[in-house]
Length: 315
Image (cartoon, rainbow, N blue to C red; front, side):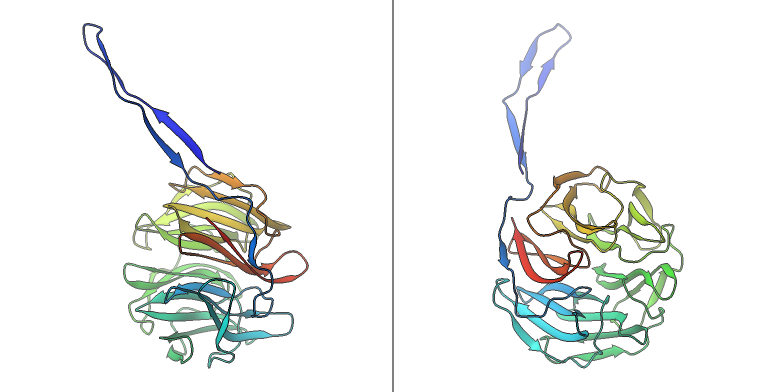
């Protein structure tokens, strides 16, 4: 969806004479619709609560839960069609609702649920095959359904669930030593939210705190947080994904009592525009999204009854 805007400047002096500029124009970018799935059946098993990153100019899918078990496999693809298992059995426990980021030229896996019930371990790998445990027991509580980003050359862990909804924020320069930026941010304790880095700020979008949320928060330091909006125009949701694409924030899918396939974007976190009310992928949640090759990718998840291993790309 694209929109074209035109404008010109008319200047009037004190005697009423006017001068008119040339016409200027620009176009806003949305998603090219419709689109086809890159693959409807990737080589990794159907799953949800996995993590995805872009590393070494490839898409990566890490762990999650399929219909049979919690996974600790790691997969990569250069095109979203052909997938290769870097390892079928990484040394970290099979888990879901963990987070992954790329930091210090390495893949990182942070915390998550493995049935024990919640982890606060941190792992890294330079190739997706060989993994090293940075710490078995970070000072933040074991948790799942949190978010992680890289900001200010540090790893960040934001909120999540450890038996209660959290609104703490932690950071680390090495994955080993962690500091609490705040034990209680002004946004409500929550999980299944999304987080990105945009406009040199940390952002927290939506999630569940006992009810689905559609608030949007930002911080320049992880300590002081400001509500960009308490009620964005998209419905409250959890288990959605967010990315930064085309210099905008994006919110994709999620769950509000049913799986969603709407897509929204914003240039400032305050005003939001619906790119599409019904993307061609099935309504879903607990999927992942990344940006690679100037495309927005949507990977796997749950679509209200079945787990998916499809991969979609939008320009």
